[in-house]
Length: 130
Image 1: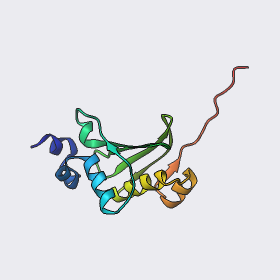
Image 2: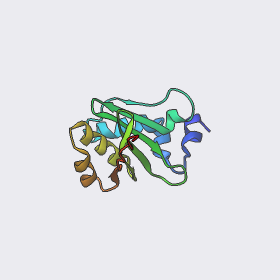
Image 3: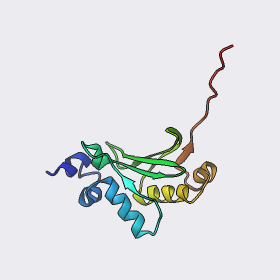
């Protein structure tokens, strides 16, 4: 069994194993559907190079990971290192559509309205020392 097959779990992600991992599969999906997701990167070593992807833009980073016991894609939208929105998508095309919308200027409210699986993270003000 290849490194990519054992890292991904062929039973859950045969299509990703075929394409060499999450990052190349995501890039291919975006190209096929003419979506602008920018450059897709993955860690260079270890299991994560097959199971994680990052899509960077001036607005922030879309981080994508894989579910390990069921097939789904975990999406974190980070701005300045802080998670602003997150969700779990069941289809790789949905992940590419979220990234395309974000890069295209969609607000967090617009994203969560259009993609019902995404939710804005609650902000808790830091208590001021009195």
